[in-house]
Amino acid sequence: MRRPRLLPLALAAVAASLPACSSGSGGTGGGATTTTSTTTTTTTTPPVIGGSRPVTVHVPSSYKAGTKVPLVMMLHGYGFQASIEEAYLDITDQSNAQGFIYAMPQGTTDSTGSPFWNASNACCNFDGSTVDDSTYLSTVITEIEAAYTIDPKQVYLFGHSNGGFMSYRMACDHADQIAAIAVLAGDMPDDVSMCKPKQPVSILHIQGTADMSISYTGGMINGNAYPGATTAVSDWVTLDGCSATADTSSPNLDLDTMLAGAETTVTKYGSCMPGGAAELWTIMGGGHIPNLTPNFTPDAIQFLTSHARP
Image (tube, rainbow, N blue to C red):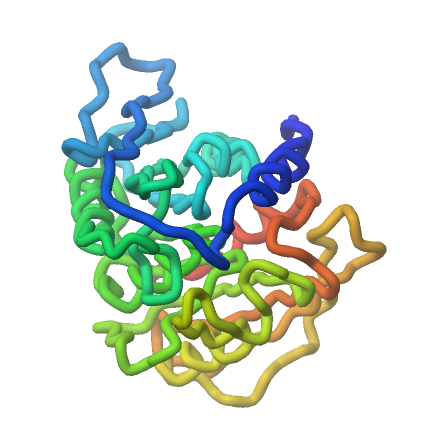
């Protein structure tokens, strides 16, 4: 049974008191979590992943060393602990049901005490920190692959807001490690020439048209531009070598409990290079922190796990 979706209200309250990704200041600092691993078959002490910034790793009870499984890494939004983002997205249920290993790294904290990822000029390194989250997260993936039997063709990222910006950054910088990403209310760098993936990555962008923190149509944060949902997906249509012809024939999805009916349109781009795909799920009238329906996370995870690297 899935847990009740009570966190959107709490997250909205937090977002109201923070600059979300629309303003703020930042710094270095250390926001780490304690490494944990869930299993019913062994009492072996789990390995510490992430060095001085330990990562929470959930290992489903079905995991057996020697049998390859996917890895899903979740990247939290600005100002949120990974544990709060997890309570909102509830990816652990899907890890248990589908048998993938699930990692929850934590960004460092800025001068306001807000966890962040140094993802792009726009979001959300407001203090000019020199922290290199791209290298850090790449190293975390490598360490998890060394500690567990991970299928290297099935490494996926799921990012929200600032974590979505960081997911795009990782796809640009470390396409050789990542098969697919799902981004909720994040964005690409405004200058697409900064994105130089070594190979195709499958991209799912999910965003509400009424997002007041990261505008669906693009905008500015502290004078730094971000392109918007349709441009971000269009960038990856080009990067993945997809056809520019949009397929809008898929039925609408119901992803937000506060909006009537199936409010989310689905736009797909096909005929991509092997390993590439690009989809845009537009939540009509949806905000920055949608009130998620029970099928939101399973649907997003299904996109990821159906786009293994060839």
